[in-house]
Structures are given as structure tokens and as C-alpha cells.
Length: 286
Image 1 (cartoon, one colour):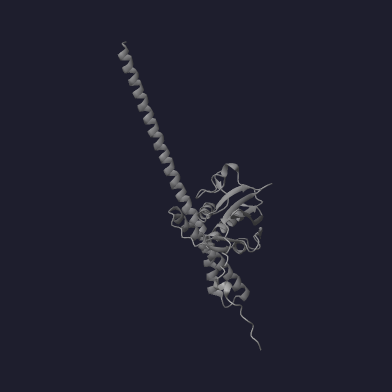
Image 2: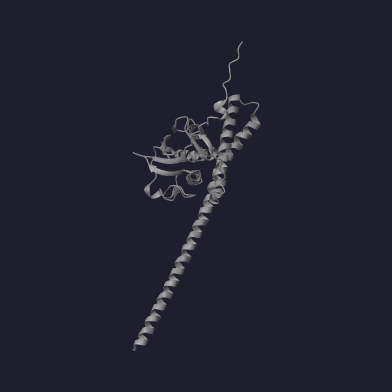
């Protein structure tokens, strides 16, 4: 065999090898695309099912108690009427929160989430969320340890949404003791929602902030929910100049940390400002 024949044969073998590799790569890409499409379809179907279930629960409660009030309003004890109306109001707020979580996703992804920053009393918001989320008789001991007077610069509605999602997460997946506490951290304020539950397995930590993901045991999800609470909390916090992350709690449990910028101190009054130069009012003489 001449040297040219050997070269031509080597080139042919190389060409065949490259063609085979190209076919193999194309098949792998096609398989990956098909797998991604199947997973996307599965996630969409699971999401629709979860949302339907989550929305149906408060709707069923609202409809049931409303029907009872319509049928028996005049014969019910006033205390029962108050109790039923309180339940209807609570479930209505829960339904509104679910709808808001679903609607906020496309706004975050497209960068069209409106924010209205103002000076917010963080302790007041934390106590409000705690009272609504952890009601008596549910077997959860929850408390707030954020002192009054802590003011942050943020959108009050979105801060409450972040706190609510972190608290709801602790209620569903944490233990029977939940604490919402805080501390100053540079020019931010750190809020920690901790619990004494089993914590998040190391292999699951990277997934808990992904949309539609929940911790699972085998093929079963733990608890209910849409799998949107933690991703929404993180995105909202980042949109307001803070962040949300997970830490393991010692000796057991979870710590979900949330930072938000501290409100700047009020500007000092100028010497000739009306507030500084105005004469004090004299008390009237009688």
C-alpha cells in the first residue's frame, strides 16, 4: 500500500469517526431536549393540580360557612356568627395570598414588578404575619423577637409577602417551635425564621429555591403547597436590595434568613428651616 493510499484511508476512517460522533451527539441532544420537554410538561401538570387543590381548599371553606350563615343567620348564636365570619375572612385572605403568589411570578421574571419603597416598621409586620399564620390550637408555638422601632426601607406589602412565605414554610415543614427574630447586619437588617424540625437534607438545599420544587421522601412530596413560596421570597427580597438563604440550625432544624436595607436616618434640620425657626406656641392665659 502506497503512502497516499494509507493517508486516504486514515482520512476516510477519521471522517467516518467524526460522522458517527456527530450522529451520537445529535441523538444525545435530541434525547436531552425530549427529556426537558417531558419534565416541563410534568411540572406544568403538577403545578396546575397543586394550584387547583390549594385554591379549592379555602374556596370550599368560604362557600360552606357562607351557605351556613345564609341558611341559619337568624337562629345562630352571635358568638357562632362571629366565629364563622372570622373563618370566612381568614380564608379569604389566604386565597388572596395564593393568587398574589401566582400572579407575582411573571412580573418578577419580566422585571415589571412595581415596588413602592417606604419606611416600614418591621416589628409590626412580623407580629402581624405571626398572628395570622400561627393561630391558637394548631399545635405550633410561635413567637417574634424583633424589637419595636426597627425601620427598614422597602415595599411594606412585599416585605409582608416575604415574611408570610417564610412563616408558611416553617408551619408546613418545620417543627412545633418557630421563632422570628432579627439583628442589625451592617446597613441591612437580618430576619431569621427558625424552627426545630428535621431541617433540609444536604442534597435538597440546592432545590428548595427553585420554582415548583418541594422536599420529597421517595416519590412523595412532604406537605402541601405550590412550591413557589421560597423562590418568590428570595426574588422579592433581592428586588428590594436584600436576599434570602438557608442555614442549618444547631442542634436540629432550619434557619431561613432574610435581609432588607435599613431605613436611612432622618435628615437633620437646617438652621433657617421653618421647623427650626418657628417660635413655640404659648399656652393661652386664662
